[in-house]
Length: 183
Image (cartoon, rainbow, N blue to C red; front, side, top):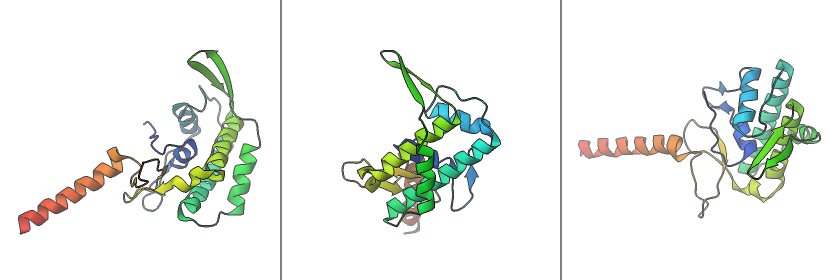
């Protein structure tokens, strides 16, 4: 299984590792190895070894705090101080180390704490800056993914045109063709 990276922001893609939150919740970080794989696929680190169950639990707790804060920002609601404190605590550690190998190639190294610090810093940058005003909730039912709307008109509705957008457009087409047949 590969992870989807369609939110246009690292912190929101991390928050999306819990899918279908309002209906049939699907945990994508089931095992410590899943978290290690996500960090590599997301480009946070080149490799992550030896993730413990306790570290996985910390990662999930940070993910949920980020999701709740982003959801509050998207809805213009107040943020929970405990969630802010969790993100601040994660971001207070040194982030993943980047080392330029050659022009066009960088090495990303760090352990779980550095990965969580990088995710906390990413969330802090998003939620503390003007991009927080661009956070949207996918209109595709039952999708619960949040994304950054960088469209020119600011009217993007779906996390991904290929998945949620396609599903909604197909349903609308079926509805229209049914109506045409009935008339």
